[in-house]
Amino acid sequence: MGKISEAGCIHPQAIVEPGAKIGAGTRVWAFAHVLPGAKVGKQCNLCDHTFLENDVILGDEVTVKCGVYLWDGIEIQDRVFIGPNATFTNDKFPRSRQYPERFERTVVCQGASIGANATILPGLTIGANAMVGAGAVVTHDVPANSIVTGNPARIVGYVDTAVKPSLRSKESTEVEDSTVQGVKLIRMHHVEDMRGDLCVAQWESDLPFTPRRVFYVYNVPNVRVRGEHAHKECHQFLVCVSGSVSVVVDDGRNREEYSLDRPWIGLYLPPRVWGIQYKYSANAVLMVFASHLYDADDYLREYDAFLKFIGS
Image (tube, rainbow, N blue to C red; front, side, top):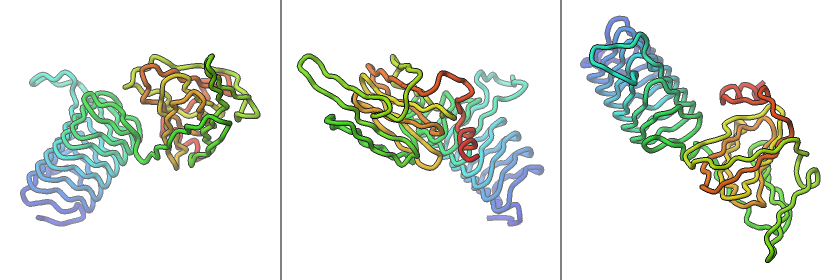
């Protein structure tokens, strides 16, 4: 390495233009080029053949692997990993020597990882701790903690999520507690008969609350994700009466995924639990019983706001 100072270590064959801000402990390797307006935090690692334009912000402990170019309007928050040759864009309709008044902002939130050769379209937000698979083409915002792959990128799972087996027995009512606070997987009483099957649940004795509202979700394309919110006060009970759907529950400390694939299996979600539904089968019908009438103010629709709410 070349010069060593509070600004970090800069290879003699790297170019850091005057005016660029480089945090303590950051390493800038050979053939990297940082333009004057760029801001780079502490303990970052800019590998060979990387480029940072003027209006670029990097937080602390960011790793940018070889062949990554970061253009005006891109913000990378703390502890983000960007794999080799990942491609960022900042103009949906580029023309030679024609520039927008302001480039769309792309934000990669703290702890996220971008796989090698992934392509990120402009103006998107990659949520905290999300993981973008190698070669993915990201055309929409990526929710916090989600894993996306493919072209176009779709959610295929969630990081640090324990996948729980489905209850298969149908003989009697049974409750299985979750590591997610208050969540319960409930097996309702089910009877098979040559004339047709029957499933029964009695409110208060079998289930945790008496519902005031019911709605059902159907005709959801497999690539779509629903839910992605929590409630401040409302309790919910989810039953997939046809087909199958996967439900992710999260209390801010633990995260689990359940497959609802039997009409006698239901999942109880208390308030203050983040819920996501995805992997809908073609014939899925998800019925949801709610303890409260609809109230828009009861919803927490941003994951950061949810974490702040339960922390308070």
